[in-house]
Image 1 (tube, rainbow, N blue to C red):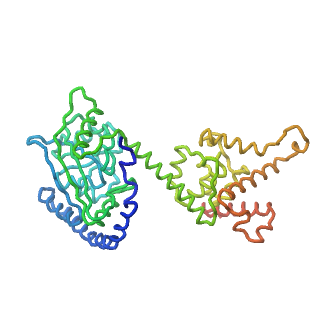
Image 2: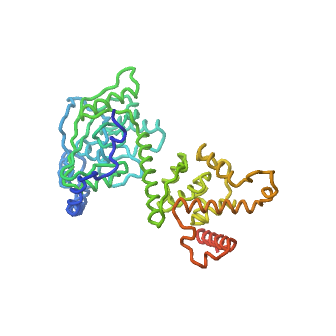
Length: 452
């Protein structure tokens, strides 16, 4: 059974002793990449001047060879007279379209924000991918009827190409047209640098091709596949996926692009937690292990955290640790106003921030239970039994809540009670400190929003 982890490379560089060769090669690789960048300009100039033809493809393949990208056709099972306009291949890097474009003239659907240089010179075309699915299919069918140029699809997202393939999307196969399967394998010579990663982009994949001595793309044209009567698009896609996987000796898995996205998010959150711990240590604190579980985050909270800057993300998680019942969105809004973790905690506890009931409880049932336990600590121990308990004022309980929240925050991050304060600050009364904090928050709010 192929694991999801084995389908991807999370880092460009190898672990263990393999990194030594990369370090030793690094100065030479940088020099080689700089020289090749000048050759990229020549390549773009040639691609812009020469008309689309077999001669242009031949020249471009030679120039890409100088750039360290060799393209070889190792097998061709296409029959004479068969010329499918629908090409389908596996996806091992963001450069796959250019590699196949250098062999056969084709277009690949792209988004409107694709760089103009790539669209004009290397076979990218906008077929209206931001429109509805039906409209997108209709645009491609109309294009294929009006021209002899083929359209290339990658029904899976990028993988390492070493262990298996993701499940093919059924989209290209819904057109019920003959399909030309193409398989791509890659060999990188000299330095063990991964071709692509989970976070890989076109420009980074291209840069590391310039950096390494040589990257060889081996392309196989398999026998044409045709739809079978009564066969649905899912079965058609599975049949083509199996044929391509067999040709490159990998497994045709049932993992989808959604599984990849979830795995990517999981790694990002793990990295996020690690960076939070590192930030606490660099601030001079000692991260203490706690028996309690970390605050539970829903999917929407995770998405919000991933969209923040590193500094903002650390601040939000620090507040979340102290006030697990408050949603991430409320914490973000408050920090944007105060710009400080301590002031944010105080404002929320004092009720200066409005929190809707819908926002409380977004973090799940476990967090709700945590909130209940946390709040019960400030209720009278024996309500109605003694007059002393009944005469505890709301202000005193609120003050106790604030002090406990501060203590929890300091204990969690290993901070001394008076850490970061001068002797004069320590002698200020609670009321004076509170007033100063409010005035500071107001000034920051005015500066942020341009108010006088």
